[in-house]
Image (cartoon, rainbow, N blue to C red; front, side, top):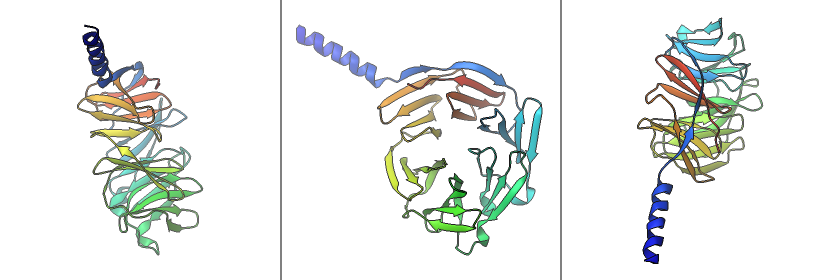
Length: 263
């Protein structure tokens, strides 16, 4: 009988551990916007959107726009430095640098560089550099936009990039097999782990990421081996962004901001 009780409680604990713990999200506010894409906030509380391929920066009644019809569709936007915003136009192999008033600072056409470069991933890095994934050799490099100098820093990797994200010191990517990697500015590549399949994902740091799959938003910590399901009102949405404990959910109705505290 005693053994049966032990087995019973062990089974209950196993079931409980297999279920996602819940993480409560507290609604802060809702902002009604008319946009096709929501890109996120900066530290000055401006939010950034794209509509009709026009890039916009908005706060309260203040709004600034940038458009460049000649370069086609905006592929990626890097907002890490609001004083130096990066717009990537993949179809034209070109990056535009903007100041905080969305004035064009610099245009970089990688097709004109002395070293053949076809960019399929890019973002701002430290020391006046850009992360560049060159699909010609399947390697990561750093481009100094002041010196017009490019150097390859990594070995090549065969799998295509499914998702990428970067900060000033690290380039993260997930390949088509859901393997998660990082590369530092010295070219050291680290394999993190295989992520679950996802509809969308955002990497928070070296150990944490948020994924959206099957109408469920989950945060995982690979170092602590923890997983939490984030409870929000929306079950479908166009995009989510996380920054400084604020989770922003973008739907057709606008942006809803939630406060979440990650354990």
